[in-house]
Image 1 (cartoon, rainbow, N blue to C red):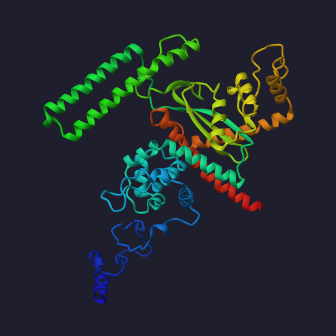
Image 2 (tube, helix red, strand yellow):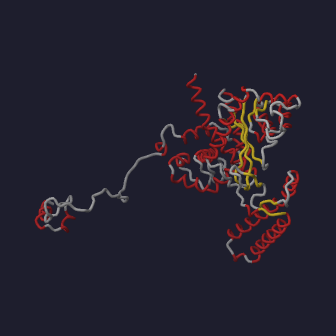
Image 3 (cartoon, rainbow, N blue to C red):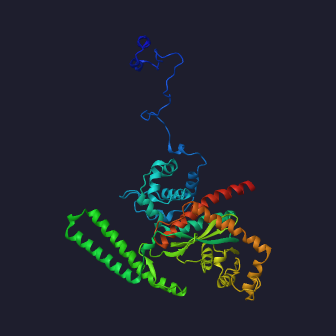
Length: 453
């Protein structure tokens, strides 16, 4: 090696530089002259590395994924395990543990991931999702089905998880805030059609289904069996959606007549249960009305519902009934905005669960009379007088810090548009948001309780 270095120095041959341990300066270069080419550290991705790392070592001890998994481990998932047909001692491939799918969707909801395909990719690429999977392979189809097929189970988990927090004393139902928000539906404006056109589309869809079935029966070699079955299934699903849309026409027509809206009733063939609503930006789009009830102080979501009503009138009594069914008790005070003000609802709540409604009286009607001092029956007069006091107005300020905050958090986590169809599936998605939100709130509330103890 010394000879090769000396030869390179003696001959000044740049080709000989490849045989040296390190690059040598050009012997013919003038003193003080430097090369114009920069010297940098270039990547070498072909270099092999041995990195002994286990999945558990990928995440720190206080990582959010560990918090989600700890929450899932404390849930009673017996209803999901009872549906598994693969049991010990019998044939059958074991399915994915429902706890894994539950944890994945909760964590994905907190991250603002609402696509099953995106979640499946993260399970291969992201350390937190790989840690939740624990080496179990998942696919997007299983994830998508699991998200919307267990609405009843999710509803029960919301009840039991909130009841546990109430038992600990970190959540109370003394005062709640209720609000609704319009969430864009998975339907376009062009998918809305009238009754006559829906009948025509239904006939065309039925004829298409029959033609595809005959094609499979008469000429099995025309397409593969899987492609033929997929085409028949897609056509049948479209026919069913059109049939449901046609069945929704009378209800839409009755609602338009009650609201004194001119024009024929039109229903979407893509999402028959979606209705055109006025959104926050003033535009009109197909949407669902998501209703959330939140306990003040703790900001824990205690009630969830999805309706097709374009406004919030008459939505308050059903939610109060839901809370009584869930927890065996109703709130003493309810904070709502002016969109929920319905005198009959205020009377119903006062006579039923005895809840006191805190909502601003309507000041647009009854010119010449003060909104807090109008002649009404005893219940309404008491509500008007109460809302005129500084104490009630101070209490009402908690509504914005509760409902508006929770709504904004849900929007930031992706609750901008529902990519599922139907009220039942939309409610399942909303329950995922409620459960995921409560996971982090429970951690914060318990930590605060420990500090105050």
